[in-house]
Every structure is written in C-alpha cells, then in structure tokens.
Length: 186
Image (cartoon, rainbow, N blue to C red; front, side, top):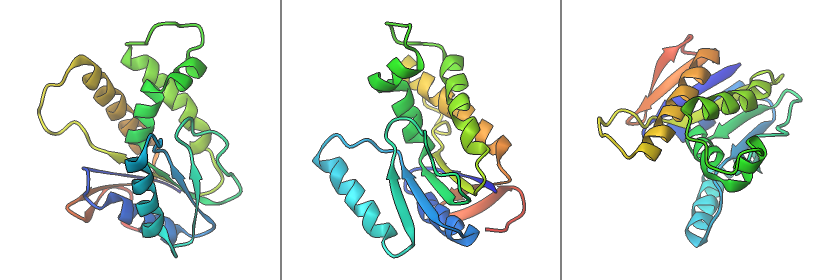
C-alpha cells in the first residue's frame, strides 16, 4: 500500500504517519531526509529519535538521494518530501549526480520534477508499504522570489504525483487527519 500524507508545519502529520505505518505493520523503517549542518539540527534529530523511541522503527538517514531503500516487505515511512525536494534541488552533490553535464544551476521546474519522479518510481514499486509525508507550501497566497516559487512549484508537482500514485491520501489539519483519497483505513 502507498499512503501519502500532507499538511502544514506542526499540524501533526508526522505523528499520524507513524501511526499509519504501525497499523500497516511489518518491519518499520523510518527514512529521515533532513541533512545535519550544525548543533541545532543535531538537537532536532535527537528529539525526533526520542519521539519515535519504543515505536519499533529502524531509522535510515538519507539526506541525499533516496536510493537503496529496503525492499523485503518492510513498511517504509519517508519523512519528508518537502525536505527531500529542497535537498534534491539545492545540494551541490546531488546536483552533480543528477545533472553532471551542467555547470550552472538548472532553472527549469520540469527538469527537477522529472528527475524526482525518476528517483521515486523504484520506491513506488517496492514490495512493502510506503508512507510518504510532505508539507503543503502553496496555500498562503504570498508571492515569493523566483527561486522559492520554483521550489514551491516542484514540490506541488511531486505532491500531486505522489497523491495520484497513492492508494490512500490524507491531509492533516490541526491534528485531524482528513481522508482525501481511498477508504479511511488508517
């Protein structure tokens, strides 16, 4: 089963995603996409590990590409696509890997959208359950600088793609999961 969960910052989507993964069962794997740049990031990681303690998750740190995820029937929770999309677009190591011929930054939204979809296709074909978590960043009505708008467009495209591919989709609002797609089974 593929489950897509979105919502605003601090809305409770991570806690809901963890409970969904636990209900889906099997070996639980938590894929953390946040890169660690300093002490503040380390504190966030420690806090997240404490929040998951005792819930049965094995954590894989994947601040670069989402390659080599387990595929032996595990339930994998990927936290989160908004962070991964930013990593994908702005990490120079990833840029060199996905676009080795280009020396300059790519400005095309479709380039990043297509490359992210290519990366996600093997994950969508895994034998186990996959739970994707992502943020909603397009509802505030604010016009941002062109680079931020490019990020928002790519993330919106990826969120839409993942919702299309999912068996069940939810939006979490103020801690309340709303079923957007599929039956309310989680």
